[in-house]
Image (cartoon, rainbow, N blue to C red; front, side):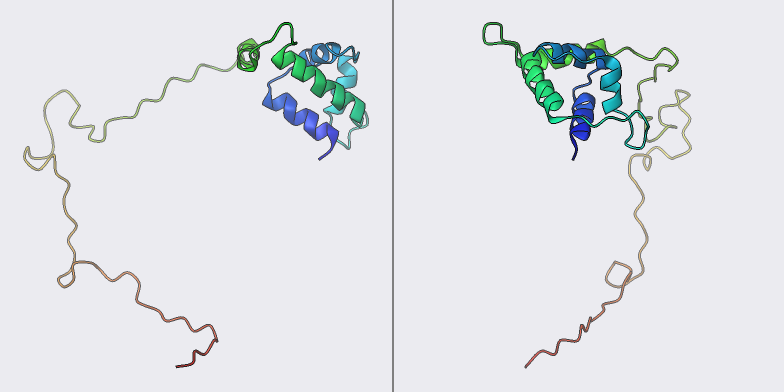
Length: 155
């Protein structure tokens, strides 16, 4: 895994935007622009792709510790910080709100409301039993097979 892969995965896992990553790097006095940062997230075959150096990743990880945990004098709760990031993610305006899924009742005729049912009253609650042929009560699905894998057993 390259440093670029690590940086990409952390950005996705922590739901960070480019400007937030720039702010995290500034916590450890490391200055970087958004365009330089964007070069790290490009595909490797892109002409503007740039390899993320060890120094950039080291400073990002140190800044991330300060960002999530806070300092010794001013500690933070990491779950609160992550919840704040999640709340800051803007909703897409073009996407419609999906209605909450509600499962339909299994017997839709039972809940129709007009009280007419196609089934008889006594049999409507019980499922029908499957009819098996006479004998042991179960149909033969697969016959028994003896596998010979070439090993001869001594008897």
